[in-house]
Image (cartoon, rainbow, N blue to C red):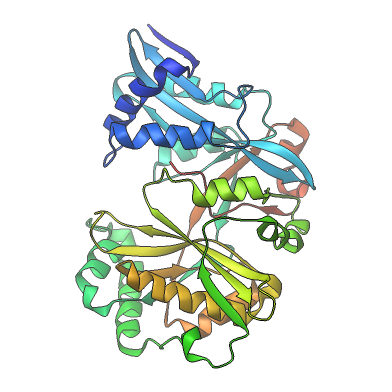
Amino acid sequence: MVTVREVEDKDIIPLAEFLSKGFPYTTKEFWVPLFELWWNSNPAYTDQFPRGWVLEQHPSIVGFIGNIPVPFLIRGAVHIAAVANSWYVDPSVRGLSSLRLFNEYLNQKRASLFLFKRGNDEHVLKILSRYQFEEYILPKSQKEYVYILNKRKADFIFRDFLFKNRIPKLSELGELYKQAGFLVFAYLYQKSVILECDVPGNTYSSSLCTSCDESFSRIWDPSLNSCDVALSRDTKTLNWLYFSSARANKRVVIQCHRSRDKTLAGYMVFDIQRMNPSGEGIMNLMDICIENNDPQVLASLTSFAIETGKQNNAALLLVWANSQETEKYFRSMFSMRMNAHHYRYIRFSEPSAMNSGRDHYRTVCLPMIFPPQ
């Protein structure tokens, strides 16, 4: 008999063992600190929120869905979003048992909205549609800009980045040929970005950052005020998202200050993603905030990011735009751009909001950065 219950303290080690079997490239040692990040070090977590639910076929765990509370602003007021994470069920009990887990997640009472990040599983997409989740595609422009940091890593760039170590589907060949053409063009004609150290009398200066203060929260105010629904950018949440140590990828935060008074003018957050810890990586933009969309701030941060990527054995830098001004800058600086589709799904807990969807909350600003899974 398969039963469902909330995650308890006694489940941490058995869960780590179970999930390391279900998710390739992970180990038991990977999951335990990740659970610490989701719950114990999460400033939004209290024991009023379930940590998740397990399917149990006595005496073994055969299914799991994680539940991570994250503060969101809904028309300026702080509410809690429940982020579903690492949903996995043993193949021997999939079907109705999987839906029992998902129903437990949706039936929790203290969440105002539910967030889901979908991978490539079409079955999951059908479930989200059935439960009236709204789909959002990030970034808004659906474009990513690519800068080659190390042209000698051609084998990695084409094999791991372009083909993702797999044989492409027939339907993907057209887009792959186009991307391969962009890559070859970038190899031949990529512009050299002017480094901030080469510009005399710099107005701005960029550096690595190790923690966020109130200035990192305040710089978000203009953009958050224009959103009906948005991630709360309070200092505790930012430090939790940016600087928690338990993650598969190396996270790098780059800050830009005015030279005259050292006030914050903008920042970027990157993940350096590697398949092999000692191998080449891709430096991928995860979050960005530029005061007044100032192109000089953007140029300072971008040039510092390029140098940081080179120092960390990254072969590529991937960025996306959060404004028209940023889009214009990246389009002028980077020879290669590609279609990008990162999916987020949202469902409101109150029926009136759910039924009217985007007409009720006109501007929903979902973040690219996400609690790690």
